[in-house]
Amino acid sequence: MSRTMFTTAVHAGRPETGTPSIPSVPSIDLAVSYRASDAATLHAMLAGEEPGAAYSRYGSPTLEAFEQAMIVLEGAGTARACASGMAAVQLALLLTGIKAGDTLLAAQDCYGATFAVIDTVFRHLGIQPIFVDATDLAVVQDALVTFRPRALLVEPMSNPLLRLCDIAATADLAHTHDAQLIVDATFTTPYLLRPFEQGADIVIHSVSKYIGGHDDVLGGIVLARVERAEDLRNLIILTGGLLGPQAAYLAMRGLRTLPLRMREHCRNAASVAAWLEQQPGIARVFYPGLPSHPQHKLATRALSNGYGGMVAFELSQASETAVLRFLDALQLCLPVTTLGGIASQILYPACSSHRTLPPERRRELGIGDGLLRLSVGIEDPADIQSDLETALTVIR
Ligand SMILES: Cc1ncc(COP(=O)(O)O)c(C=O)c1O
Image (cartoon, rainbow, N blue to C red):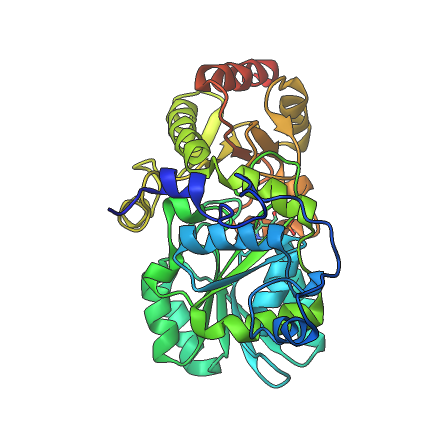
């Protein structure tokens, strides 16, 4: 019998062995080094020929439990958990085998630090970055033909405007032109989208967001098909940016309730987005679940179980002063620079994630001075709406 994600999330990665009894949750295993029954077994473990931990940079039981659970939820063949989402971005890029002289295509509205690491660190290493509008398949195809990149990095749902990239069609295009497709699925999680089923080669998440879900763990993960297991293992052993055992435990603890939380995030976001659209002080609402979203049809086709927990909206009073007064009037929604936690979290892109961009470039990207990004939490949606309504009244 195939199990739903709700059941899988609760049980995947649960320990199956132990002496003398089997723990029901993974232990937080702090050991850096391990002994084996004999020296030959230890050496076989180090070489990856025998299962088991030998040195914790090679992997450890707590980490492996989390990685195993993510492998099952994503339908991947292998995974390595990293110290942060950015460590995962870097590891995924290295896993493509990219080298000096290669071209790397990436979505122009990918996460700011991803854009920056490609545009600085990878550029300085001799890799040519090309940023494209990944929501436009014709643009992607042109770039693949013209630049013959080794890899293409996209996000299924962009930040902060929630524009969608058609992963299945993009994977087809990438493979036709011999490029590997990396999907940063932080916003969608396996609850909304399983990128391997749509043709992705490598999937990454910032575990710090929905997967951890409680704002208490910074982490990332890279997942790939089974053929890449040895390459991924060798890379994390050499680069060393793996997740620590306490963080892996918290990530696993968060993952257990991911589908439950996502169901509520999606329901609440749909309700808050529809409500916001009716409010006099709101100029525009961006939410893939709204019929007014330009890619609503694609969202309905490509996403399962809902339209996500992220909503963006523009205040009619689009001055920085009005936005700051609005933010200060909120009592429930937390003004923080993160997303995907159980509490509603609000961010002002013009003054935070996109503050280093010149105002004209921000406007070109559609990020106006009145735009706010709301990560809708799992509180009662009536309370979230009431909080937003009070703040709207203050600036009216
Ligand atoms: C889409 C996306 N990818 C990657 C990252 C980086 O993750 P971390 O902050 O865990 O390094 C973030 C952070 O917000 C993100 O939103």
